[in-house]
Length: 393
Image (cartoon, rainbow, N blue to C red):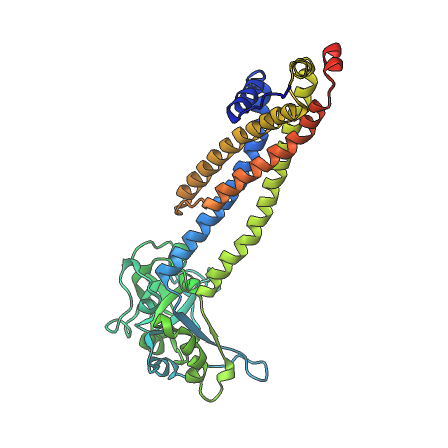
């Protein structure tokens, strides 16, 4: 006589029957798997959403902005850029916009009653009329510096400088270098040039006239066509200071944002490790549930063996129960992780992104955990002799 084969539907019904008999234990065991899977999906999803937001910001801000700053001389002193450097950079053919700032020895205060020592970390800088257009920084209130106001006693405040001075809109006055300057505008945050956020910007000619500015730029910003960024970068130092190009430091601000995206991968790896530990704990819970199930169902196992069930069919039954139990937990974890990712991303203003490979990997991990967790209990159940199982039940 040949034992009847169990079809896929039979295996599914037998496995579901075993789980339905112990609903509370099944829910608690599946919860461990769900927590682990949800943690892994949420970590990957939140990291991907953050990276996508960063990439969109880079696309919006552009990666074609380069800066040139004075480096150090051979004697270790701070170098100085030539006064003509911004005009020289403007002559590079692919360059589309140029702006510059220069350090001014002055402080900005809300009134002349505040001591000069109280600077609140705000730098006063001379700025060319093309600076804010080059940086693509829009005013939150008021207007930018332009050719008409470059020589007048007006100031444009960076977003952080305005906050520290207690000014949220244009139209007031601040005390700079022993005289009043009208607040022409308050800027939005400059993501590619955070130093602008903490600065009070005075027109280039006004800084010379009223604040004793020497005309030497301390930072030059330039934008070029995307295809020519590397070529411009190669010649920028020699153009800024032809006599001493080694004293010029050239950088691309967008590199810092890209580095942040890369650095987030290390933090993601740490959180994924924690999720894997939670998943492992869930797998141990499934294995424990299946072992107890085998001990409690010795009579059922013995009866089925007496009626002709083979050892392979008994093993298949318990592996199927373990897989179903893990699959329920994995499905719940995927849904929970996707929901957490979406909620957190929307709260932060990021585009919600849950990679398909993360969902596929979570389901694959679930099946792997279910298989491993069910093997030992299934083999133990299959080894029980029918007579011994019925006698000890």
